[in-house]
Length: 575
Image 1 (cartoon, rainbow, N blue to C red):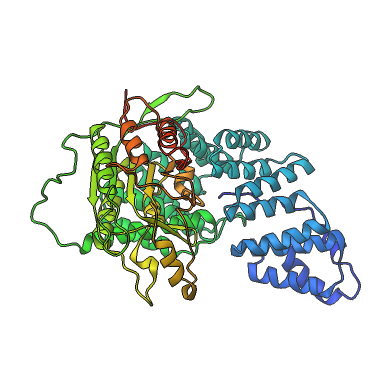
Image 2 (image 1 turned 45 degrees about the vertical axis):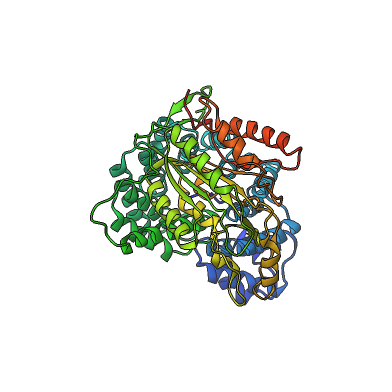
């Protein structure tokens, strides 16, 4: 359960005392304003009351509020916002601000949600429910210190708030304080053992600690509880609890190497109806993970696995990820798990402008990553089939890793705000979908999305890209619009933004063109290969040094750019 609902005080006798309303009030009134009324009946009753035009002002605002509650039960957040906005126009109240803020939260519009919760708190009196809900929005933005402060206030107002303990624990886990997180979530389980949500949160901690069987046990119990009794709080997005539980159990089964049960759980996720942003992200992850496991089943069995030439013969050391756990000062913590990298360099394009440097860049980066202990999957000048296979093999391997790096050099393009990587055999043909010939970055991000993995994606793409005009020329009939450069990501994935964190580094700013370079390497990759292996250099500091070097080398024509939800200091190379 993500949010809590603050109900307004209603005086039914006053609300339904209007003349000429006697016949309907005994039926429509209670149906509209009772939170246990099924969503469709609630919406229908409130709509009929509004159509009678017998109420105005505060009373009419109340009807719009309850219809918004009905829409919320259905997960129709656009209608929630519309009705809540009308209720606020008629009579502002803390309850309506809270409801509208919660709808914005479920749409993934966290800043607007926080603004509504702030308005609710300003109207007063202070409410633990609103502090809790605002804490959820701060947590989703990655502002864990503010989230924990709000959960503290919610717990102070309501010491028996299981969900506030649970979500405070989730915030502590995101900051690396696994023991503090476990204590909070255990308290949530103690307060209300019938709730499935704290068990799902605890399963994430068990998996982060490597205790896979405990993670599976907790998610299995959460699924049983969710099936036995639907969530009591009407603000819980429809289907979200089971979608979350099945996703986490599927990831746990994968970590155990149990592909059969993982596939069953991912299939169950896809059967659910996702209405909120978190559930949609879980479905995207489940879809990719299920496809990867099915693809592995369909692949021909080899008699014996030959050692991969590109893999490091030495077991990689643990990555060092630091996450400050409040209130202690930031300190480095050693992470457990493998470090893996995918490195692709595409330059030998057959039907669009060839690029001389990406294969050189990929070799240099792969060598640098192996030198600091990464197991590297390397691909050069890959056609679409080989590129997809290389990526899918890597995503399967990454399921059991603690830190994953993806590096791509070559042509890239944005279409309708989505980023695509371009295989060397791409050929635009009349009547075909241009995007079908490319690799969608969103698929890679969904496959990596996990609350306990750190992901670093580095794109040295869009070098004097000749494809934007061709995409634009083939696009109008299919609604495709191509732009220069790559697009800034609209999000970093649900689990990424709530978990270990994701960083995406671009060779140049969004919408701009990266240079291929006049030497053997691009300006960006040349600088990256020089700094990526520097011992004791934190990854964002490393990228700052790369940015300064590229700006100097290109006389300001190219400015590398990054977007991060990392929660602490990440060191690719230890001191």
